[in-house]
Image (cartoon, rainbow, N blue to C red; front, side, top):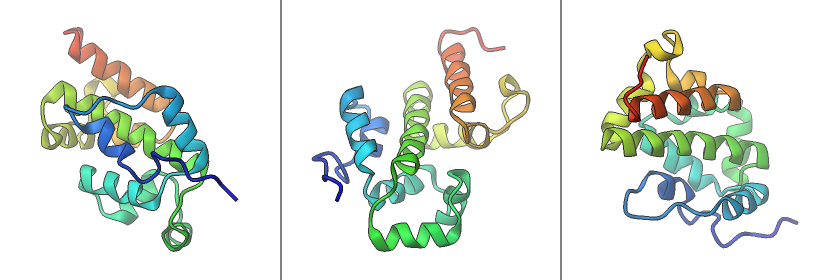
Length: 146
């Protein structure tokens, strides 16, 4: 049986996006991801990104049946939790750069020239793609957008 972490279900997604809250430490994030996030964290990410649950599940590589099983159980696997945190991290970076969740969403859902015309949310389906999205956000932040 998995040990329930103090942070699980307590707003890990929100902590990445909120300006006034400090982000959790990497050790805390690793601990929570290993334990598996509460399903509510997936719901929080869905709400922040303004995507239908099936759409977000598809982005995360979750089949509809798996999504329903996770909802019934109330907990995500380590791999699924890692993906949720990846998207939350990108959303948080975009919010801090663009100043609002709405602007961040708009940017993450639109094709970006710096990604060869790819949509950042689509590009971030792999960790390597997510790193490229983060690199592009960093270049924009430092004024070296290409």
